[in-house]
Length: 218
Image (cartoon, rainbow, N blue to C red; front, side, top):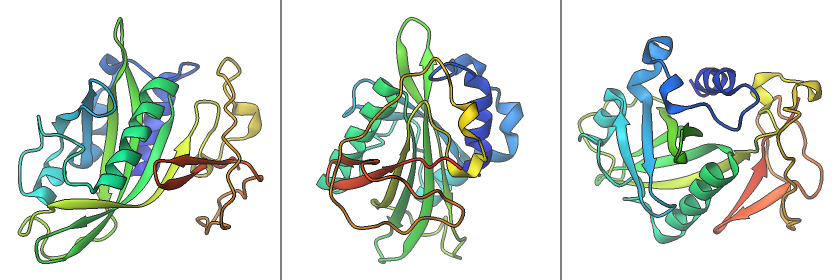
């Protein structure tokens, strides 16, 4: 799901930081629509669902359209998400976020979230295309709502990079995009997904209270 939606978005943007909102054709990603959403941003702390898929709404047992995307996170995770939203809208970054959804019965739903920027001509990158896909389908989805969420992992992909799952080579780096160098932060060696490249020292970044690793290149 994450790979498919990212590849679709990446094919639309071409040599730009982000495609225009009007270029998104629901028919091209019809199989993904139940888990996708579009956010409207009016600053990092004012982010609302503009559209939300049926499966995503079902997991929350409510219609998400118009609701605050930042609602239901603790203070530290909310601060991290605000920094993340700023990186997406201001710098054109993409993000893959591991999240845990929690119900009032302490049931936990592990999900993977993708967030990528969309441009609105004359207004800038004020929209975000996203998806949130459960890693499993427990029997209680749709019966007990996800009321709060927490971040388990976070990876940023800058505009001149390609995530390891796309199989892109260094020759595919966008030649007109600026190259970003993250701050040098001391930290533990991360456990990377199978197939991911090992990043050089210094390819880390602090977002709120979380340590973020830039997207790897194959």
